[in-house]
Amino acid sequence: MRSLLPFLGVLYGFVLPAGAIPNQIGGFLARAESPLNDTEIGDQLLDPALWSGERKLPGNWLAEAPIGTVAASYLAARPRVFGVTAVIVQARHRTDRLDSLAITFADAGSYFGYLDEKLPPGLSRREREAELQRRLTGKQREFNNFFRDTTTTLKDALRDRADTRPREGQIGKTRTLRAEVIDYRKDELLLRLIVGGERLLRVIIQPAESATREWLDPGRSGLSDRELGQVYEARVTRTRTGDVQIDDLPVVPQGYKPYCGLNTLTMAARYFGLHLDEDWLAVAGKFQNTGSAAGSQIPRLYLAVAREAGLDLHKSNDFSVSEARNSLDRGLPVVVWRRFSAERNRVHSQQTIQSARNPGFRIPQPDTATRSSWPGEKAPLHASVVVGYNAERREVLFLESWAGMDTPRRMRAEELSATAYLTFYFKR
Image (tube, rainbow, N blue to C red; front, side, top):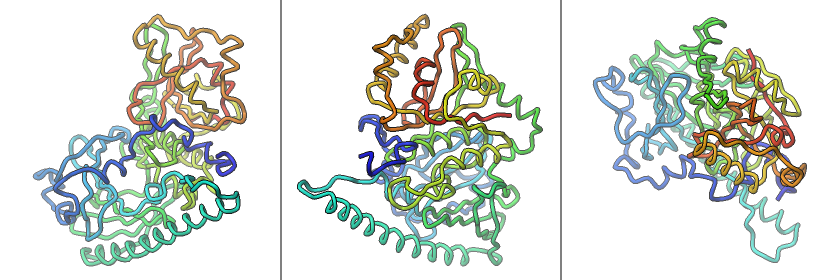
């Protein structure tokens, strides 16, 4: 498996046991029963009464990771919008008022998912490679045709609804995360089309007066450096047992997409108030439509996210407890790419449960046998977000991009130091 995925394991969580990987939102929506399935709701989403607060959004909406203080949710249905079946419809609310809608019509991450290596038995290595390439080429052709046709359909539909001629523009301060957009004006609404590298096709609907050219939420971009620092530091709590922890950092489940590194970065980005998701990060990171990370440029995304949020970033080939504490004390998370094993993952789960049941529990100091069980250099790689520490107990608290994992997990700092591959420290 590693021969086919030399870099995929770095950020993808590909190695997680099947039971640990939840259904990705798209997978759930494909099976969700709703009267809105395949029902056209485009005009409802453009209704002025919806945006004035006189009407509610149609259907059943489920909460997802917020963006700063902006609440986020998605529609538990697969409706048609502007004549095209949506992959997912997402809403953003600010103080209970609808702020924006994002309708995704094509997403290569959901379409290609993990690289499927299940092949008939008895094939030679050359035959296996040829069969994998044949399958991939077929999927790429199907997706490219769908993407091209859907883009044309959407442009025509938006042009028909617009009051004025479309205008081209950009979102984002950094070159890495900059998105080319086409804006269509409909009454008091702006319909913003994003076409991302034949991977992502999305329309954002929002009041024209609140549309910006930044990914950073206006509630954060208007703050001074001092005020922004106070926002982050206010999220840090300290317990009687000595835990120092960033509260409420949002978990963005990766599901069946091979995106653990992108999702962990998305978790940090949303905490910083950036209106970004893993799908646009995949476009910005130059992911190819292959179900693998070959050719992608992920590390530079971390620096771009930091700069979009008005922060600095330090990248290191190891994990420093003191440097991590320095960031965490200021309310800034730390992302670690580390070597992973299912055995140690089970141990971390047990340690977390024991700590929750018994506040006096301490993870034992690692002996020789324990150290020998830590994954070595040949182990697959995975990404986690460090959100806290306990200095006296030499423990770190971390989150995963797995559904149902909102409670930070625990391991000894020595283990993280020994298994870290790359560490990204966000700084002010």
